Image (cartoon, rainbow, N blue to C red; front, side, top):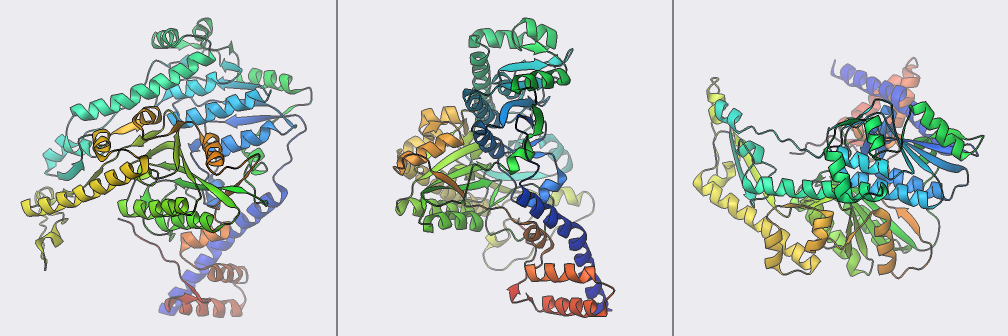
Length: 594
């Protein structure tokens, strides 16, 4: 029976791979080979920003099968390529009805302006702007176009910026849950919703501080594009909401018209034979990064929370979610260090933080690159905060968008004590331990004892001090000054530059230019990606926890299930997997990260 179950499981995996993985591989291979459908000689690129927007392209090729996702890095590199493509005559942008991440808007706005400077017109169309999220940032992108259209009767509700937090303290008190956390220091407010029932003074100060900076950046950019003063722009916006027709009279937009009308207008500008062409389809055949010969700047991409290790798989094979694994990112940096063609490194960081030990491992690779004479320039995306700033702080230079969220030089840690809550329902938590009493400090039954809290607080102080020291060394600031501006506070890129935490306000290509200058590179250089995406078959083997050999063998076996020899092959592979080896390669197994 045991052997039968193993065999059945092997057959199921093989079928899954064959029915899903093999078509994915074939589609992906065919698409890469053909470069997709060829763009017309007179092309208008159709960029739909209503899709899910990430900072970087997912390393999982199967995620694309879900459809609908797009990355900022893909958008800006594709537009750079399109500037010099004689087939591309213009750009049509479909704006989302809600908000965009502010730094994403900054980066895309700059790319649009650069595209326009090449003499190619841009038209943005909106079916409504509603006060959800950072809608001022969406408006900022729309105003960067040559013409900003809205659908007749559409809502124009760009009246400000709001951010809402949910506080759980009273709920926890009601049910006996204790959030037992240490923070370094008062501005490290990630766990405040568990500790309080309202904003503390420092929480309010920090949040309103970055919100005001983001709002002023977006409205000032829109004012420049609409040829108004910032004061006049904010006055007009805040007097809303309006319908599209009223926004037109106030010169907040350029024209009222349906989507079809906007399409015909931009096609007319492009030429009599012009056709709309999907932006993502064009992007597949328009890569700004190449693998040619000669001097190169390595591009290392890092997006998501920071954890130790390397991706062991076991997750959703179709998920586009990203995680920064310290082994994988460090390996990419060391590959760039060892590559003789690479003269400098641009590390694109989009991370809210994570493990301090994982961050330290990545920072060590950054320091090694600098030690061997290869400058490292960090380009910050939506955020590079906490651990994201830890891995950035000793780069040769840091470039951030005005609205990037960074800093948050601080730490927090703790636990939820559930003993009282569970006891109310007849569940008792008991604990035994040997050795130091601190061994059981993180048990869920009770709060920290005074002794455990003292030990834990001391450990937190050491981590915080390590963070401060690394920032002080990297940014060439006195430790006292770092402690003054740290305390866990989040700053925008514009604020961080004034504080000395960031060198320059700008985007990815500004970081590339900075790297060229630091490496004394003249003329054109190629960008060499060091964090290559997985192939479809690799994505499946990671997700299913099997080796490449077993993937191919099981797929073949699934194809010929009617052949008795297939059963024998599957049984053999199952036996080998039980011994922990398949085809001489260690089996990849799912990992659990706490």
